[in-house]
Amino acid sequence: MPEISIITPSYNSSKYLDETINSVLNQTFKDWEWLITDDCSTDNSVEILEEQNDPRIKVFKAKKNGGAGHARNISLENATGRFITFLDADDFWESNFLEEMVNFMKSENAELAYSTYSRCDENLNPTIGDFEADTIVNFNNLLRTCRLSLLSSMYDSKRVGKFYFPEGTKREDHVMWLELLKKIPQGKPLKKTLSKYRMLPNSVSRNKSNIMKDQYLVYKDYMKFSTLKSLYYTANWAFNGFIKYSKIFN
Image (tube, rainbow, N blue to C red; front, side, top):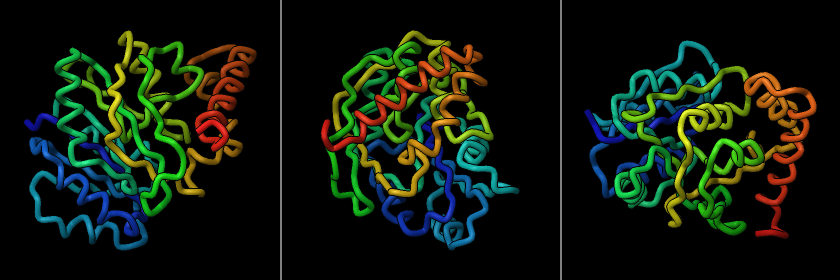
C-alpha cells in the first residue's frame, strides 16, 4: 500500500493537465498513488491521462457526469493510502509538497493539516497575496469560513477513516471538512507555501454571489441548523470570502 493517495477529478482539463501531471511526477516524495476520475470529458483529457506510463497513476471514468464530488468519491473508493490529499486537474504543487506535508503530519501527530498556497492567474503568476496557513482549524471557525483548500490539505485515513463528498451541492468540500472536524478536534497549519491555486474567473468557488444559496444549504440541510442560524453563518461566510479574495486586504 502506498503512503499517500492523491485524489483528482478531471473534466475538460486538457489545457492545464500537463502542468498538473508534471507537478505530481516531480514530487521528491515518491511513495504515492494518484487516482484520477474523469467526469465524462468531451475534450482529450482522457487521452492525455492514459498516455502516462506510470503504474502509480490510475485513471477511472465516471459512467455519468456527476460533478467534482462524484468524481472524487469514485477515486476515494479505490484509494489504499494512509494519507489522503487532493489536487484538482488545473492546480499545481511545488516539488516538496508531499514530503513536507507527510513529515509535518508525523512530527505534529496531526490527523489533519493544511499549508499556505499561492493565488495565481491561469499562467500561475501570483495575483494577490498567499493564503496563509496561520490558524488552527476547528469545527467552530470552519463554520464561518472554509480555510481548508483541497489542494493544500491532507488527512490521515488510518486514524480518522475516509470522508466522502456529498453530491448535489457546489459546496461539497466545505461539507466534507465540517464532517471531518466533527470527529477530530483540529487541523494544524504548516506555514510554508507549497502549492499554487489558479483563480480562474469562471470557477465555482470564485463566483460567491452565485453560490450563496448553496452555502446557506450547507448549514440548513447538511448541518441541520435553524433558518436564523443558517443565515448568520452564511453572512459570516460571505464577509470572510470578501476579505479572503479582495485585493484591498491582500
